[in-house]
Image (cartoon, rainbow, N blue to C red; front, side, top):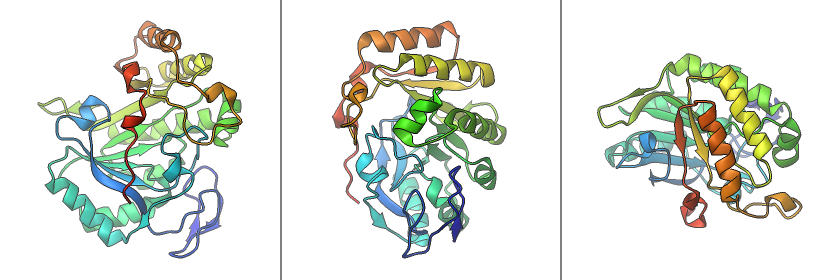
Length: 287
């Protein structure tokens, strides 16, 4: 395949054995962990967990990623599309609330084929960086029930510095608008588990409350009725040796500043406790 799935538009050649372009991934699905996951937002994890498929590789490769081992170093195990469909069925049989596709963008072709082979009778979640190409998202219409996009940056200079992602904010706005077009308003079942909809996530970074406030302003302007998940789970991780500002957890004062602004804007959603900033919540990659 010649790949233009993400906004980088690499036109990279990707085959079952060859991976070029920014992500460096082959065309076959590569996974690091497939298991019930309890640490998503309450309407996603519920009591039985979210059926998470953690894909290897990423279109952003953030320097601070808590999953750096798999997102930047591409560690994982290659499986067939048929096996991916079987894993969807296995997770569904385990009783999870949904199938949670984590960092799925490089594998959209395989995901569509796998869902054509077997479509679970539970919601399909697309859990991504927010750095998405609208044309790719349109191909997922009818396949995805819930979108969980990050909105990482209002400051594009930070997006370039930490994630090598030019025009991040504009790209994320366009992507989330397409996600909302597909899902419409959030819907929940009688257990308050999400059946359909979009939740926008934002991770507060140390020393960058201005960036976070800018993100909330953009959300308020463009998506005022969309659920927001404010995350305080940042722990120093990944390849941050040359970024002194990222080499500590966020402070209670920083988090309260951003959280209070979220409330002032009257945005609905969720705010993590700072106790979530703990490495024990980073999944164990068993490949």
